[in-house]
Structure formats: C-alpha cells, structure tokens
Length: 262
Image (cartoon, rainbow, N blue to C red; front, side, top):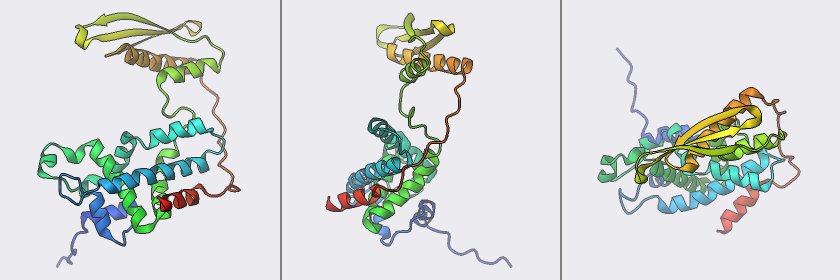
C-alpha cells in the first residue's frame, strides 16, 4: 500500500520557501500579492513602501560591494537594478505569479504575466517583509535575490547604451570617435525604417544598424561596431575589484533608521 503523501503545500507556503523568508503574519504576504482589481484590500500601499525599501537596500548593497565606484556610476547601476524589467525577471525566478490574486478581467487579459503587475507585486512583497520582520529582514532578502545578478555585473558598463560604450572603448585606446551616416530610409513617413552606418575608419569597421528611428539605428550600428572592435582588440581581463572596507558604518543600519522615521 502506498503511504499517504499528505496535503500539498499552499502557493503562499511554497513562495515563502523560495523567498527564504517565512512571515509571522501571512496576511501581509497575501495582501502584497493582491492586485487592486481583486478587491479593496490590495497591494498599492505596500508597493509604495517596498519601492523605498528596495532603493535604500540596493544603495547599501552597492556601497558595500563596489568600494571604488563613484556616486554617478552607483546611481546608474542602482537605477538599472530597480527598474521594472529587473524586478520582473526576479519575480519570474520566484514564480511569483503562482500566488497572485487578480480580478477576472485582469486574468482574462493576461495580467498574471504582465511585467508591470509582477514588478509591482515584488516591491509590495519587500514592503510586507519590512512590516513583518523589520528593515534588516527586507535588506537580507533583497541581498539574496540580487546576489546572482550582482556576481556578474560590471558597474562600469551596466545601464550604458551602445553608443556610449563604443565611445568610451575608443577613447580609452586613443582611437578617433565613430562616424554615423544614414545610408537608407524605407517605408512611409509614419512607419519609416532607418539604416545607419557606424564607421570606425582607423579599425576599418563599417557596421550597419537598422531601427524605427535614426537613434535606434545608430544604437544598433554601434552595438555591431563595438562587437567587431572588441574582436579585433580583445581587452586585458581586469583584476578582481576589492570590496569596500568595513571601517565605515553599515549602510543598512543607516537606511533602517531612515525608514523607521518615515
């Protein structure tokens, strides 16, 4: 006789396992996953709180991990990490949609897979953890979730567009800047397709890019030109960057007091 398997774990219990955080008040997690289309008790206020918690925690994490990066680069990297697409990708990894509560209309329109809804719900979860276990618990959760991303981040390039990256790459090697030329335009005025050449004469590179605007075509051309340039002149691998020293006060404690006063 087969032994009974017992009751399967609820979606909320499984999600807490994936989060690595178990709520003292599970109702907070349920609220964090409730879209406004489902009822009056929804996640928008928790999302507001979670957005602030996330920005503060990510700022503290970057400050600790990248001790030699200036304020401008830190701000750019943080903006890239807390944007909707980054949150959506983490929400997908957590299978957050399995616990979402949406109204019938949102369900029928595919809201359970919508990046904005999943990103907002993840921010609401951070807010719920803050209320349930304090800022330090939320900080530790965010640190765990972002660790796989941060292990592969280059803070010097993350969030920069292709034209900027190509320009910096050329300038660092004292190579003249690229020349962008529109070589063709296709289609009617309201739906044009531009084709642009990105040329780096010194390296004999002539890369074509296309897009629905001149800017988009230039970015596509710069991407291809940078790939060709890097293939011609491979960079010397950078030495591992040292972490920040531990002499300064832990930023997480500073953020914690700030949020507590809010």
